[in-house]
Image (cartoon, rainbow, N blue to C red):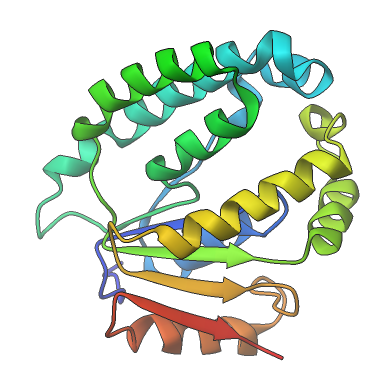
Length: 213
């Protein structure tokens, strides 16, 4: 299938429960792009992390860091004939979690490793940043009931949501379309998805917004 996306590499990003994986699936299915998904279920430290952040924070963070580098390693070699890629994560957001969850000494170690690895990772042609009120995130997380997410507290989601808001505000490494996903359903409502595609195709500036009511 020939892709009809004008961007070769799109990263969908947002806090837990914002809908990034569902949207990434939908975009890849629509366009015939390669789908690159985070694999949290493969992180052996994650369930422990949600029970005891201080004990398991660094191990959880470093596992994800190396996992993401390995997943994205080949994207720098993408040529014009390769299929586009849609990912449900953005490598640049990795330090966001580290700053929330690690002690000062752990964060310094993490940052040293991150700075060494980050030049190996390709920058997306477009970032779609999903936002939603924390009440929406909590409801979605509870509804899907993933085993490794059972220990997530409302306080943690609140802090994470605020951190994502600051991250999207400051992000300037690639064009970004910031989407309020509270009232959008890209999987079950074709009209919502069609509107988003129009906004993606109409992207001209480095930062634009999409909000449906």
